[in-house]
Image 1 (cartoon, rainbow, N blue to C red):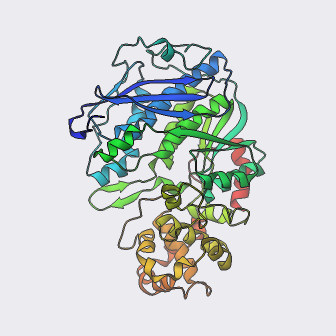
Image 2 (tube, rainbow, N blue to C red; image 1 turned 135 degrees about the vertical axis):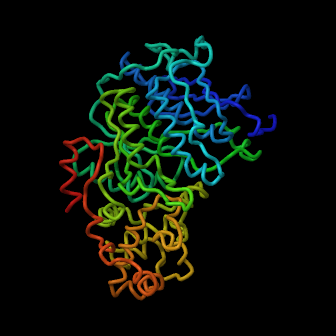
Image 3 (cartoon, one colour; image 1 turned 90 degrees about the vertical axis):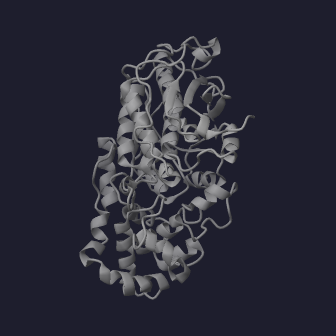
Length: 476
């Protein structure tokens, strides 16, 4: 392989994409300039898939959407100024969505690398940038049928394709998705617990639900890892956007009408960086992405496919309160990202105890569950370790900004800490005592109440009939 030099690259190409209905494998192909092809594969279990003409067209549109969004993993290696789409055209609405996903979804990546993507990311709307005569094997989305519109025509309007009421629910192994799964179960919605990749921890958590499961495979182009070793730009990508696009394709192949995530209200708020402004680590978990992506799916892919977050009207603290109502998952869940980043197999200890996710989940659950239960889950009392003051200060946005992690707002952390500061069983612990002594006197007492943060409300895309069933349960 020739040496990868990000400074000499001028264009990023979406070369082609295909789906084989016999094997369930989608192939997503990219390249820089005229360099080697980078091929990612996504494997949807359940093949072979028999698709009528309407659903086949929706699958084609979902495949292109996946091709475009997943390209963010590769584009970031060089962030060239030119983007080319070989073989199919996109309309202006698609270009706008992609530019949002790339610019905002790579916001943390750009900040950490000292880059600016605003005005740099431009998707070519209205025409293909290469000849449309693809090889025969690339003209069919899957074995047994041809694409109704051909590759060179931008999509027009999506129609309903006859999907049945059933939800694919994304599970990540943490508390949020488990709250959604139990809420849907109580509401009588049939569901399949779905995850992408080979995490044994997530698999064990999914098995604990007792529900049908769907484990989707994803293999990145191996060349990307070599590019990283050779100095490619690297950093955080909008994983939720990619997983959302994968699950939209899976839902169409399974013939189901809902793709459900568990992103709460707090995900819409980023870290305020002095001199930079807001940078949201979890932008693709926020409302702006959910709204834009969900509307695009219904207008451009399939009119009867609903994409929404079940927890959008809830704060992180409201989700924590819901989770604390059952101990069914205490020995199975984990929100510790270090386990997912570093460990291939399910670790014996599911919490590292020192990362921002561990800090926040411990703090958020503490007001809502007995202290011995919480300490039992984590294996130790994180709030009685003076060595972790800095980590909790960041959550409180005290002399630091909110960590680049999927954690709640600073106001939520401050309210939770204040609640513990009022309780005899917690207030003598090192970090809580220090909060009461040094930080609390600087804060307005009215802003430290937990109750207002538990209010249910705000914008969401939950189907109206389902929300009526859920709202009373969440508010109780």
